[in-house]
Image (cartoon, rainbow, N blue to C red; front, side):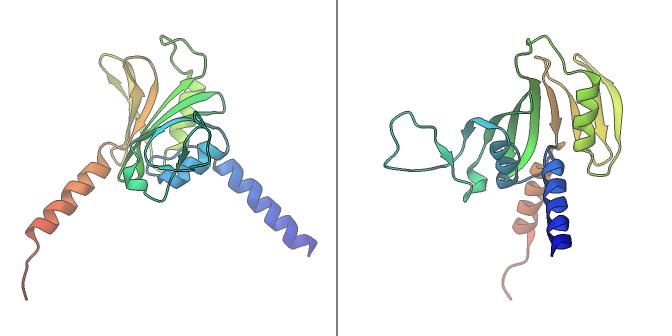
Length: 179
């Protein structure tokens, strides 16, 4: 009995430490759990649960039952402000900035390495020089990372979700009909 409790406790701890890293492609629910439960949801653009008893000015509660309706969310987590852009209910772009940092301040190399590692999905990132914002990275599967013009660090799926959506629409349009 004690052994099974220990194994369960270790599993929970590993799960919590694993969930401290972001992942492009996670669902709205996964992102809300990752940042909303462990951090602080600042704002979101998506459906909300309506509570007629709530006082005016009470923060809205995200309704994750309709994930495709979500466009974006912003969180504060572990010293970062994190902006997430969703496409078809999945994280397609995440932008990171240190809370309290000036707009001219970029993340340090240690933070960048940690974010790239968290978003590696077992694939290698290659550093490239890009203009005009300096360094950038491309992952083997086409995902991209770099700095925005206001020095926030971003990781983007490289347009894979939109490309998959286009391919699905094209397949439906060319599918044979009839019997």
